Length: 148
Image 1 (cartoon, one colour):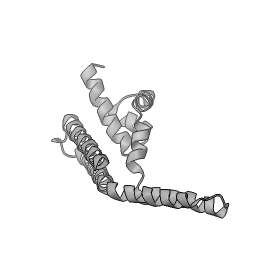
Image 2: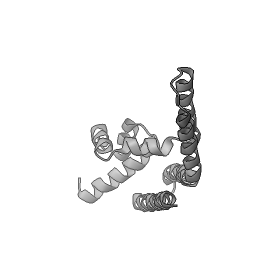
Image 3: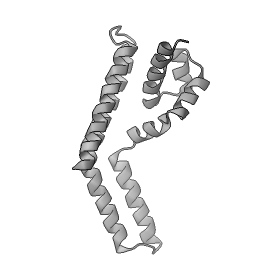
């Protein structure tokens, strides 16, 4: 396989992986072995990226509150634990706009991937460029949020 073709297949595989498609289905769709997809996912940390894109603010808040509740019920909490949870939730609220952007882009990517099955204008190059600029935008927004 030529380098350009491999890169295109890798890019499409990543998009499908981040959308939650199983490795076997990705392999069948882009005609690459499931082993190769698995190696790419491991080498480029796709699992972590998928997890980061799929966890929501309410899930994070619930997890923090459950941990605090566990400490309280075991009598192991300190007043600063409550303050830390409150502070973390406050920071999450400030970053909600970035989370919302990621959620919208993820939904848009899913729509584009499905649309590409019937729309010949949506080729791998277009999808790759779109996702590349979405990632750049998200990274810039996260940097701006972290600074402010």
